[in-house]
Image (tube, rainbow, N blue to C red; front, side):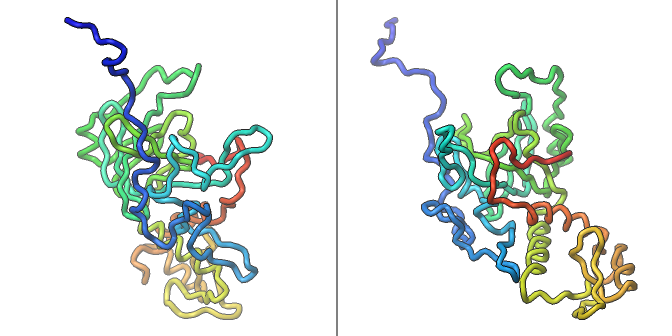
Length: 297
């Protein structure tokens, strides 16, 4: 048997680097940011005073897979050179939203998510990785894959994940996996950066549109119960979300419980509005190093 020489042997390596972001070109929406200019192509809605309004439909801060940075590349839409450290650091906040369409759990939890543009990407959980010299948990309990497939539900780090709900992660970067796919990996160091909203992506975007519309100059409040336009001193708003408006107290009380004119009732919508307002009221443009956004749970 001949021994391979240096010229004939092949080193053991990971997969070759992919072209950064293989999903480029799959999101043709006008809301998609310009990869050359690093700014949103979509017209940013403004308040009557001219202040920009945050909308989940703006791909600059809420990118689809086609616009996410890849960890094998320095995307200047997301990173800028810091003059003092002479290194690239994030220049803004960003978050990925994807509705969970499938999940399985073998050695690790694996999700398939569909984003704002309808692109499906995989997400792998590696929450036992805690970086250099940080010990992994001594005990990891995994749910059998058959149970996850049957129930469509899994729990990771105290977060319940379910098919039909929406996965959210701040500062994600695409990674190339050994199986040839490209997606998002959630490490132990990043576990404070993800959460799951118990709503579909369509429900979240509908709530977003309602919230954004109320900040525009031409907004006219309409009673959530009887659909009548509200003017003058009649206007009442839900004290919790400040999104639902009513023409009188009777309409407000009647709309709270299921079975009212609104099929869901405001009780079901109030928390959704408050969840979405967390995003729409955040300043996504100003990033302070080591003081990024984190989810509490």
